[in-house]
Amino acid sequence: MTDRPIAAPDSDAMVAYKTILKRVLDNRPSGTRQRLARALGKNRSFISQIANPAYPVPIPVQHLETMFELCHFSQDDRQTFLAAYRRAHPRRLALVHTVQRTRIVSLAVPDLGDAKRNRAVDALIADFVRRLRKFIDDIE
Image (cartoon, rainbow, N blue to C red; front, side, top):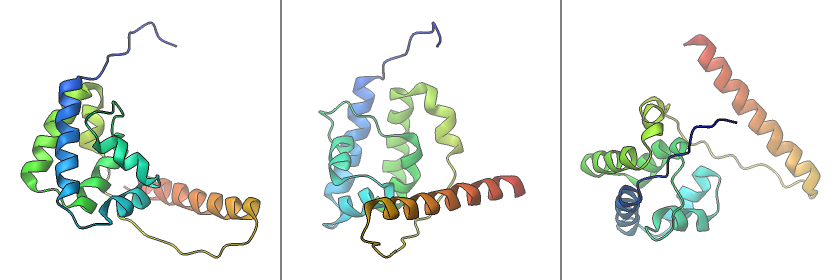
């Protein structure tokens, strides 16, 4: 643990970037929130929380690139969003610049009819992705 105080996010800046996300989502075809939730591995309610300026739930930095690509942010919206995000979360500034571009690959896997076996398959896929990321990091 550290004695350093945790800085609270700038709530005005958080409201600003969430307002931009909400506007972008409201201007997209129906189903965009569900596709975003699926791409992030979250529930649709999570998307509602991160897009609602009234909720203090921050948007995790690792989801930004996926969100920008899937929601088709304009260049102006993206720049304004990132400026507000940086004000709201100044410590994450370095992370915003180093977020690796990703792409979404959807897999349809069989339902094995057993929750324990299904979790094992999910863990195998997650392990593969971790190993793939390490492999890519090692060759760069």
